[in-house]
Image (tube, rainbow, N blue to C red; front, side, top):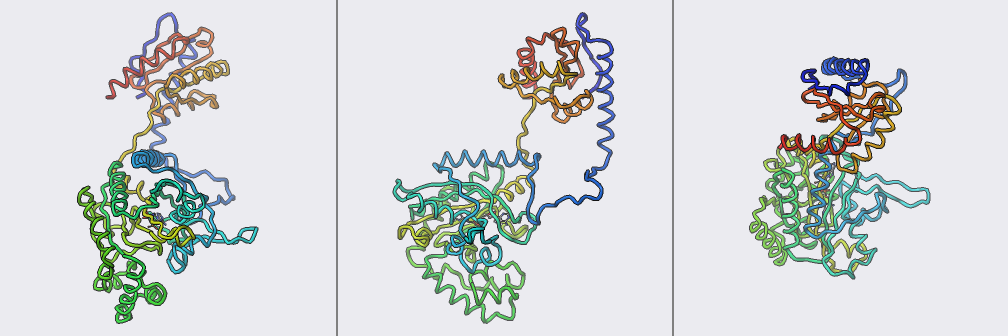
Length: 479
Ligand code: HAM
């Protein structure tokens, strides 16, 4: 890229000989540096004897080079939310503890083991939210959304906190995108949420399969729980210690256990579908028919019950196609119907709801595993300056370029040309502009084609138009 061949200089506009030589030397030195950098090990720079604070376990930084994945994801989510008529809502990260104990459930893993809760200075018991469906229901009631035309369709995104055992795709702080529909109990709502989820992930290049089940109404779940408990009692010596505890406290959670011996016991366990009332059965049949109609791939999972207490009827999980729990234990998302949630929080009786939440870290991970490359912003021009008078011109030129839609990177804070050229190389620009003392006096600027190494001196007052033309040629060649 930095080869010295084809250096074209307009005859009567040569920069001072010394300056020109220096520029060439710096380009040559950069080549050397690139070779060395490729061979050198990465050393983290910390001062001797000073302990650098580390991240908390299960927490992570999302570094600049991962951000293009997040940008693509966020922009797809916004497009889908708009297309499907969802309105954005944001909730506070800190909520009253009671909100989640009442909704997610006192005996669920999330509340029992995973919540970050503490007493604030005013003596309120507060919690770093572990999910956002309960917040959505609270907001729906708090802001009188029942008085709006129904259904009310909300979407949100943000961090959640669960004191989970960290592993790949499982963090203590993780981000979700969620879609919630309040005010309609129709089966088509459940189906449309699933169709939208499927299409959203497909648009990102991630093919999915839905695991789906119905857990009916609370009464059905109650009889099912009794049957399940009776069944597991007969298998008590075959299940793990955790499951023995679950058997006493929350038998539905027995079906979530991933331990091999417990999985074998689960295979013959009673199925909740056998306990459904007629209406729930019909509802479920309709959801499946809609999914068939929309050609969304799904698998019936008779033992899927989900780890949150507020669900009734439809429950589902989103898995990468070909990875329905075998390869990893990480669903990309989960959701279902929660017709009792608003009422449970003191809202109007019988307000139905249904929604989904997707784990953003897991989607980014899936995109990476599938080799999906997010588009990276292409920078058009690098501006290198030599001295304060060149910086002054550069500051003004930067604004002119920006306003005309040409993206520029610079290193105004650097003195040496070599240091600036290292950056030009990092940004992979097609052109570098070099402005030295002589060019400032002459009212000119040097343009270097980074591909061929060709250089020319042009009129600084016409630089924006000149670069626009050059970039058009480069872009048309790129196509
Ligand atoms: P959930 O299944 O607990 O459901 O979480 C939904 C998704 O959030 C998971 O499928 C996963 O992708 C992501 N997730 C959960 N825990 C972690 C973690 N520790 N690390 C990384 N990602 C994680 C809910 O949260 C419900 N509020 C979903 C819902 C919305 N139901 C109805 N509407």
